[in-house]
Length: 585
Image (cartoon, rainbow, N blue to C red; front, top):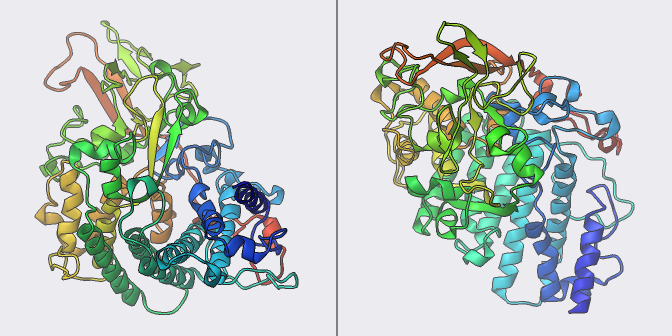
């Protein structure tokens, strides 16, 4: 046992200090036979990737600050210091590559992703030395293919196409100066690796093994990789036409859905939505979350106070303000967008009949949280004489401006906030879940120009039925017929993706692959809420508050073409002339 522990510590030490540029053999000090010829040690070597995530979501402090949604048109962190992600997104703090630091990029993700590639390649190279049974061998091979693809996917969607290494560098004279592949080719390689992983992994694993990959998760990620490969961002690079890849993406998503459902996976019931992200009910989250991680976030930790829980009566530091335009994206329970006259949306009673998902995600004026805490998120109040004064509720002001930490938009995001006061939060982070597979299928089918009412023989759904499964679970009626035409259908699919997968680090990368961030309004807007004095017109203002939606920009965002990719740490571009920096940086 002592030798196993020593080997584990050695490998951990080596892997925590090298990146893909480090040409040292990962088994220095031990023979290959000691590491890869021992079944237990081989398992420990590969399992490092399971135990050490590429990024610890919501626990990373300032890299970014919260989730990547806070640098999109979904939301803003109320932190005011310049290196917080939401601030970095509006100025010159996107990168400080001369200093090897990028608050937006999280260079730890870059370094650890390349470690995944190295470990995976070592495992695949020496798999024939594994002395265990076929089941164990398949698990190792599937895990290595899976994590190599997973690492490259995170690299590609952040920094663009990369040289796709399939062999470890053990030769000190190896030339690491390689041309970067285009994004499309990189994504297609990723899809191929996920396919290989699915052929070796089991579809279902015991709950005690959760956080390890499965064949169903691999097929799900394959569908996502092909969605990215077919995207506008990758359209100008690589082989094949976009139509070809969209059809491949349809097939992959359909296959993933069929595999998942045949193995017992599916959407959690509407009232169980909470347990997909928080809590300890593994019967629920292991049904829908195909691959994810668990974490325990202490009540008083910076993660909980600084990225999840707002200040004031909730004892947090920095709330996340939901953009008013994002709040408007939640359809009414009758199935219509709030902008549609058929929706019955009342802007002076804006938070009713919006579905269970809205109630879970958005903290609004007069909402009760933690059981009995009433949130007074109004900006100002009216006196009996008609005069208006700032404050009076839970939002603090300093010299006429909202104080740091409090919402400037009139709402908070609460998707990651628990429901137990003064209690640690058991968090479940879904890397991929069933809901995404239905959305991948619907989007790819719409982009491929397929009939949205035609049922696919693999999964047994039409694209329209797949979309409606997500809506029904959220307490939203099926998509109205007026939106079941090609252009409008794709628009509603994208909107559904924006809402359903919000704050799970999809929005930034979806905006990039759709190439819409430089074409759409990225500013953050707020709503001015006034508590009315006694005697107000109850017919006009049924809640006792006046909601003013005048286009008030509370945060101006700058998104340039170069922001479609993160910058590469300048030191990593010095390995040779072939490995290029991203354009604009």
